[in-house]
Image 1 (cartoon, rainbow, N blue to C red):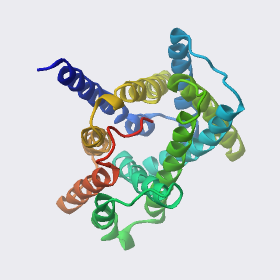
Image 2: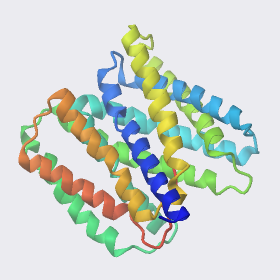
Image 3: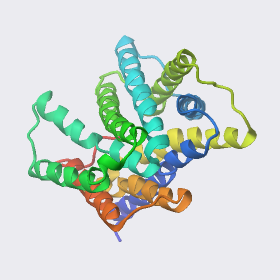
Length: 301
């Protein structure tokens, strides 16, 4: 094996490890004995502390002009909306379906690229849309009339998650394109801290308690923030450029696939063969929509 091939293989394994860590995000939200907005507060607060430690150890700069602050503020608003909708979707429909719906962000990202940045629509993207709709219909459409209002709201919130997540990634993309940009850990420290503040204000306005009720919940929230918000994405982002686009996109699908598996294993999600097939079809569509053959690797979040 050549030196370049060895480095690429190691990078792939690290992306697998990062995806594995992030796949537990929905599980942590589900088992924490705290409200969905409060869970988002502590995810971002503990994540910001971990990211701050990483940035300080690297001696990264935290200020490089007002242009960077603009992206921090916009990114924080988008990510706060993402967390707000996703955490509620997790409680209403389970972490598996909520995470698959959130990963539909690839379609909104591609649509933004076509409509805003005048990028060309690829045949993969055009094919992926009807495939995704088919998978989603098999997951929730066939029994839509039988679902209660809470479950339907959870599905809708999952779609809102995808829209908010796409907006957040566009903000990160804008920040990374600044000439005098912050490092990824420094930028994510700012975004995480601002998101925690926004979600804390949202919880207070909505009357949701922010107090951590027990030690088990505290440990879950620390793991959620440190492992998922900070470490998982740091591992992934530092290896994206070393892996081909199609392979990186495929590996990243471990996250929604594993989360769906954890939902079945840990929370006894009742899943028919048709629903399981729908989940696999939806994940395959996400892969098709995410891959752009002309790129070396997807842009790191």
